[in-house]
Image (cartoon, rainbow, N blue to C red; front, side, top):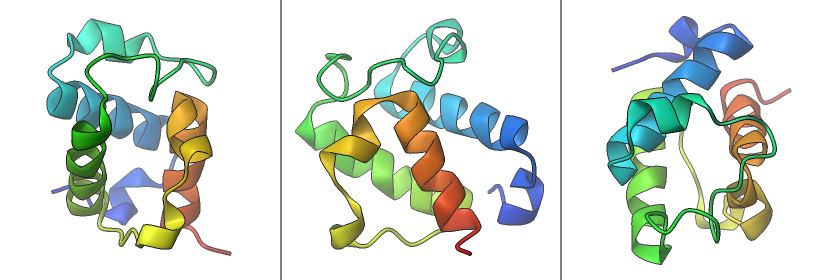
Amino acid sequence: MTTSANLDSEAALERELKGLIADVLGLDPAQAEAFGPESGLFGHLPELDSMAVAGLLTEMEDRLGIVIEDDDVDGEMLETFGGLLAFARGKLDPR
C-alpha cells in the first residue's frame, strides 16, 4: 500500500493515480500514462461506468490512505483526470 508520505510530490501522486485507474478499469498502462489534466474520465471512458466508480473510489481509499465520504463525490471530480488528481491532492493535504 502506498502511504501519503510516499505521495509528497505531484508527480508521485499522478503516477499512483494513473496506475490505480489502469488497474481498476483494466486499461493498458500506456493509455493511462497518456492522461493529462483535461483527459476525460466519467462519460468519456466506457470502462468507467457507475459500477466502476465505486471500485475506483474504494481503491483510492486503500492505496492513498484516504477516506472518501459520499458527500465528497460529484460529477466534477470524476469528469477529468485533472479533477480527480486535484480531489486526491486535497484529500491528502487538506489545508
